[in-house]
Length: 103
Image (cartoon, rainbow, N blue to C red):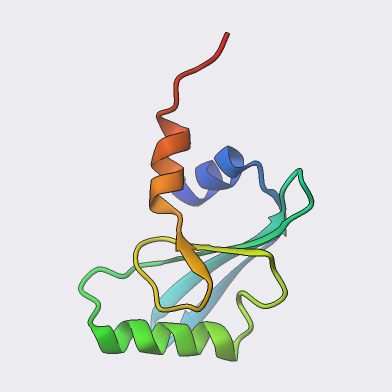
């Protein structure tokens, strides 16, 4: 299963750009687009396994330096984050993935 694509679908994101960034071997996959209500969104995926507080600080600095979440209404990231204004996508993903189907 392709989690980033699935999340974009579940969110109802009209993906306008999909880019990969490299931060010294750490890859970032960033989706930018708009929701049906017109809100602009950035979704940032990265592997945070084993990260320390310093890694999260460096993560926020990298995102700011490269404007990965600039000029959007909502910022979603996988896992924890120190990125200002960012929300974890994990609970939203689970809620929408396992929501009951209405007929």
